[in-house]
Image (cartoon, rainbow, N blue to C red; front, side):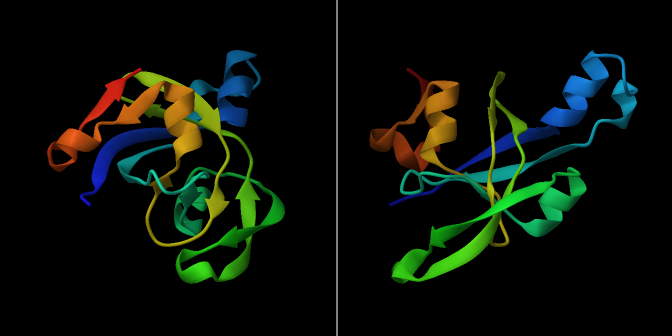
Length: 128
């Protein structure tokens, strides 16, 4: 099966809220634009530690992540951040894991997106 990669903009939600309330300057917001892998086999999203650090995200708790091959690993979960893709936004948290930003199906559902499996080789997302 092919892979779907999309450009995404990640924003520290806590900082965006503080900026909206006038408690910090909006220019202080941590944002990061990058390419993400859309993984329809993953429920949760995952991000590398370097991305979480770049966004200034707090690790709130630990959880178990089941990796490929069935291996279970304890990983950190980030605080909520905003993800923007194709002009739509949703808030989510992510497991701190791996070397690539991985978007799971809960984010797709939050954005009302589905992967078009019939045209997967064209890297197509569509609105529901």
